[in-house]
Length: 209
Image (cartoon, rainbow, N blue to C red; front, side, top):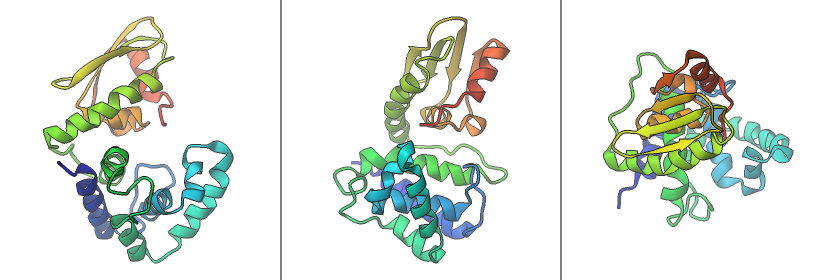
């Protein structure tokens, strides 16, 4: 069975070490050190990880993340590379399901903050795995978007959604659609066909999960 989550994790850890703790990411306000701390918190601090998605816990989660970010950077990256077996999101039973998209996205958060980047030539199996996540993300993120929206990943699938109205077609590889629907529209290489105003609204929409 392919281990895409492990491959993305290793590649991200290598890149974090190569760039150092103060390199930019596409996450506003975060350098590489901050992103590494976020990943360590998610896997090693279940008491604080809820704040990643639950606003009432966000303050506590951020305080823990900042303390983690103050650790020696090589130690922090080593913890990203080797998660504990007891982690609910990174044990052998959950790793591929919970982390394939997570580590792909954060790998690209670092890659695409640099100059001269290009989309990677990803294995078909990884693109298929990402499409399985992109379609539900699209349904959730765009269920109320005011357009008749048609999302297509050539060779993988398509989905119709939106609240109705003027037609808008969004086409891209699954990897690019995952980035788009996770709120990273500005770095996602996709094609939008429809009115310029509808396309502008979609590119500016708050789609982050």
